[in-house]
Length: 332
Image 1 (cartoon, rainbow, N blue to C red):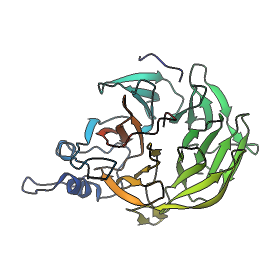
Image 2: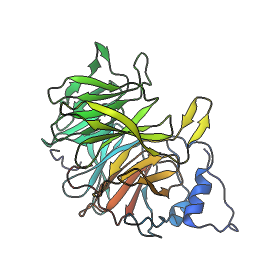
Image 3: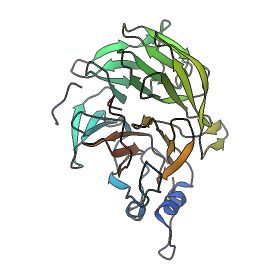
Image 4: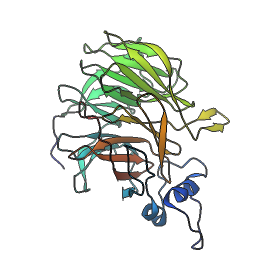
């Protein structure tokens, strides 16, 4: 074990078909929504190249498939040395990716950890879904920070981000009755406050570099929302930040696949979605899409200079060398 810190079908392509890496990714991803362990073919993995996005990534940069066949990939976050950890939910562990690309167990028996954050005290915090709660997993036994709201158990917390004050924003998509889809704030004093229960399916959450705005992804909609953060950690003035591409209409409604979020040093927002990683300026303008053969679920900058983007999802882990650098003021 690595020492703990404190902290559906894939389209068949014949050999006669010639496609660029981006077109190949689109062809492979255009089928039904991939299952939880969908894997790109060796041909797809070898051909994947990033498009040119000014200030973000150079055209033709390889999208390196580090590993496939993982067990429920979520929650990536950088450690101080530039390495990265992420969750394998179905395997009930947190996994470490070393600077050399090696994979080793980091924490075993995680009791259903889904996503991770590191707070200003260096605590490694997480949301769990087997017993729904927010916990400190820095050491065992894990310390429960929140497991109820309004006298009821939480539904299925999905994603979280710690702020500079020691509070934690987290989402609950409302997938378990009688919980409602809700954005929450866990105050530094461990009081759970409901912020917004009107998003169809809140998912990824992220803060602006200066910590004055909260971003929220809506998996069952076409937009990323942004809020102003008030002095007590509550939010106001919800508005549309960006419109997503690749939104699908299903019998249940819209599905953008919008999931994990991360930011870079310039305040650009990166969104894991149906069609890959969508990149937006700090003002919400669409800058480009890094397409992948299967829909990603979450992403984070890491590396010694925090200029490597790691993308995980559907049992796969990718690595992309970037021009952009992740925001240095927080682990993610």
